[in-house]
Length: 257
Image 1 (cartoon, rainbow, N blue to C red):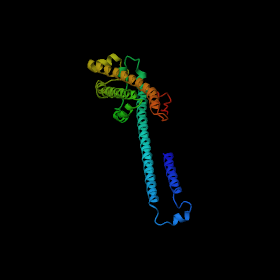
Image 2: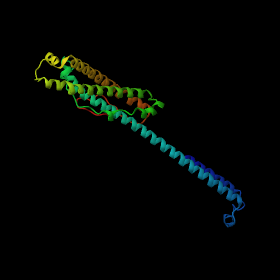
Image 3: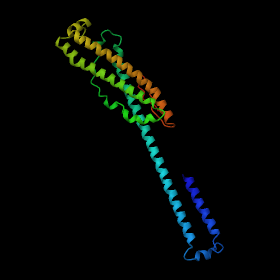
Image 4: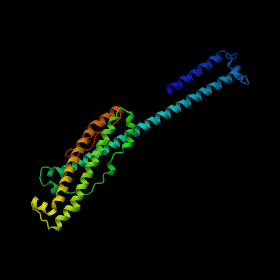
């Protein structure tokens, strides 16, 4: 735009010089300057030059404002994508930690439906993805990642709901039943199941199986998202940086860009 304004200014300058060269007083600049009032054609040229210069400045300001708005919109979209990826990484981090600390030690045990420890209810709402605000991706080359993100988010929600539901049964029914019956550490599984009854036994088994199923599935889905989605976003927004993540290692490494 700066080049355009310069070209317009030079055009106005050349026009003025050409017109002045044809003026009777061009040879005698002193005489032309002493002419009062200025000839009408001089006034007309000045008016045209002022109009052209004003229009050029207005156009330049308009283009500059458009560029500023486009840059601000791009920055906001990139930031929203990275906030979304960070939430997904936090989801994956929580699930992997829960899997390592609670699920894996009991995974192969026949008694896992009673030996798997309960956990306090997890408030996961703050880590849920704001799906509607990703609608702008539908008009980019990364339209396919919207479904990937939403599916991963739903898998995480299902996993945490399964964990919370089983913990509620374990804390609210199983443990009180054992306390009423005078449970002592070392009871065999058969004795525990006889004490709590078939209904609660089946309920615990089903709830425990759901926890393993949903947590494992959510981790797999989130791992795929961490590999595929950032790469797709980089293609849709060249030159921008997006968070990439994998399942946390033993040292609990965070996301990278």
